[in-house]
Image 1: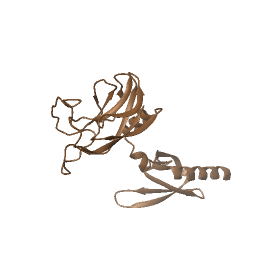
Image 2 (image 1 turned 180 degrees about the vertical axis):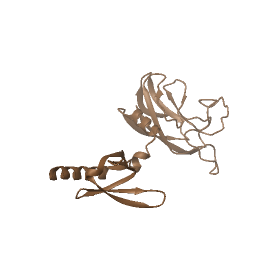
Image 3 (image 1 turned 90 degrees about the vertical axis):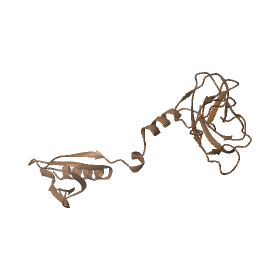
Image 4 (image 1 turned 60 degrees about the horizontal axis):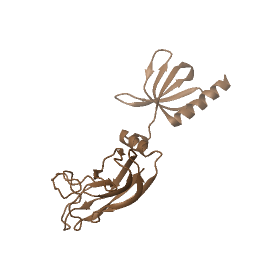
Length: 212
């Protein structure tokens, strides 16, 4: 019996450190909800709280039918979203390269050669200004909210200032700040740029991590 008591005590100590008790069932049919806080000399200490007060129950081990536990989630784990998991899955197994795309410089050669159908993922940070003057609002890689058609832009109907890409001399495609996989439309060298008809008066840059 002494050996069993020791095993039971060790078991409770271990699960107390890693789990949160939410339900304890006694032989007389009573059920309590709370948190397991300890075990000593055959007595289980169980914190419960009703609508009026909190108290610690001292329950002999022999009176307990079972204790049901719920895993305690750490703050870091609770902050992981489905989007985070999706992004990590897209990155897995890929090489990566960081480049800087300046808003006032034409197409940046990433020095990455891709093949048609290859899956890439882009992680983009930073802001830029489109046009002269420090008073112009900064915009992110998604570009200006209002889409204005301009035949002189690489993608005429897409947002001005948006991050875009192209393969070799093929047509440009929109990247923006989309958290998704990009299937390459052709084989060749990958270039990144800004969707604008005149780059000379722009300022700022985007930092782009390419997973390929």
